[in-house]
Structure formats: structure tokens, C-alpha cells
Length: 89
Image (cartoon, rainbow, N blue to C red; front, side, top):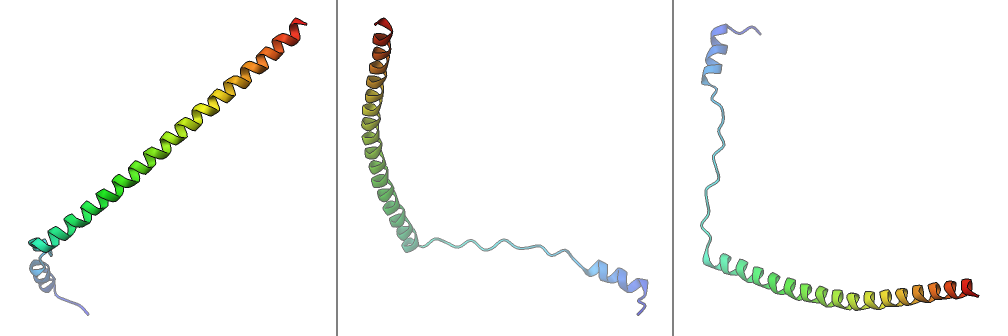
């Protein structure tokens, strides 16, 4: 089908670019805000408890690492002492 040039020009002139409209802003109602705030407060309490638990575990690990270091240093000193004693005989 052949179309006349005048029809194409009119079709292009009529075609406007489609512009998307922004969605209308909804007003936050009081029950939604209080429910969200309650959820956030609960989440903060849970995270605080979890953080305290993690800190307690880290303190226990710090004590354990200190004991392991002390054992390692003691054994190193013992080995060095034995090597020196062996060479002095």
C-alpha cells in the first residue's frame, strides 16, 4: 500500500511523546506510621540484644586467646631453654 506523503507528515505531527506522570503522593495515615514505628523499635531492641551477645562472645574469645598465647610463649621458652642446655653440655 502506498501512502501519500501528506498523511505521514500529519501522523508525525499528531504523535506527541508520551510523558509519564508521577504517581500521586499518598498521605501517611497515623495507624500506618505508628505500626511502622513499632516495628522499627522492635527491630532496634532485637539488634541491641544481638550486639550485646556478640560482645560477650568476643570477650570470652579474648580471654581464650590470651591463655593460648601464654601457653605458646611458655612452650617456646621451654624449647629454647632445652636447646641452650643441650649445647652447653
